[in-house]
Image (cartoon, rainbow over all chains, first blue to last red; front, side, top):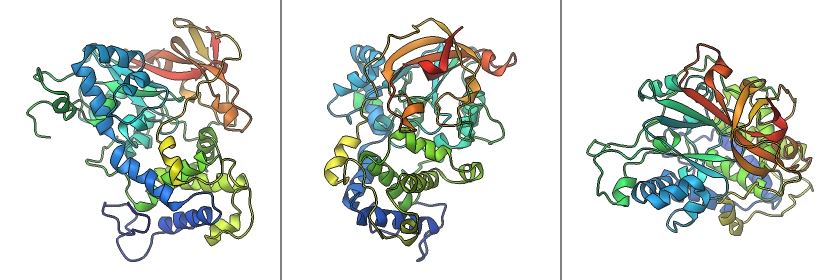
Length: 214
Length: 219
């Protein structure tokens, strides 16, 4: 998204498709102008931050980590022991900062991640969080009625499965290691990574099933 | 602070709805706000805890009715003005009008971008041994600071079990006030659903928070 590019390709809630700038666009530009004129920031640096989150850093990074954990038992163990250190050994994935914890789903236990106080989310492996993750319905209910939240999302777990909700109240960040889908024996890491969805790494979804339409 | 941001356990906000193929940003200004907050934080204008405190301190009706990145903008404007980096009339004018305090690490440039894409560590040297260890039963203190805290209301007064020790880390309650990092031990504490939500709660659910040692007492 270039700095001087007004047109917005996405649908947006502020109806900015006309020639007039929205109130928010005007207000943000005003603040950016002040901070630029004062010499606190340079617009090219802001462009580079945005470009990184639009193109380089996203759920595809986490998907590679999960696919590797499904394929390589030693890596899986290392990931569960210290996710930051384990991911550092994968040169092709974006570098990951401190305090990342991977939590493993099993037939007995399903993990789900929330931040009830704000929007804490493992940016480096999942990118920027989606709107629903940061919004009141999820933040309020995930800790009190996680099964109800999953039902809203069309996810049903067996009644006896334990649900563990991780509220991200400090700088620890959580990455769910979902269960490897059946029918993927012999698949390459690249093939497996295609099955890993963003929501399966938050615990609000499952990986795709082999052969199902994506 | 007991603000509307502390949402765990509240009712009435409706269904969780996932937007299929959601774009990273819904408008260009959202992207600019995200980048401005990251850049000004990295320039040394504020730490992450202070920026969270300013968003929480928005009036409740504003917090609840503003989109995520609008909250980021409003919090950023308030913070920059309060700390003296920008004057109120400059925000209004959209231009620098006078000399103000500069962020302590100076201008944020293209060369600084790579380093902020990887989170720095919050771990610090321990000023004292840890009081608790995995397996200990602890009660979340019944505390209600009017300033920033990361102890959510829904666990206060309740008993849980320490599961993990995350070492000693920057204490947000101090850092948010720019009163120093005041490192404290950090633990994952697990609560049974019935302890938090009463006897009718789903018995298969467990909830954990990450709690700093000053939030906890032996139980």
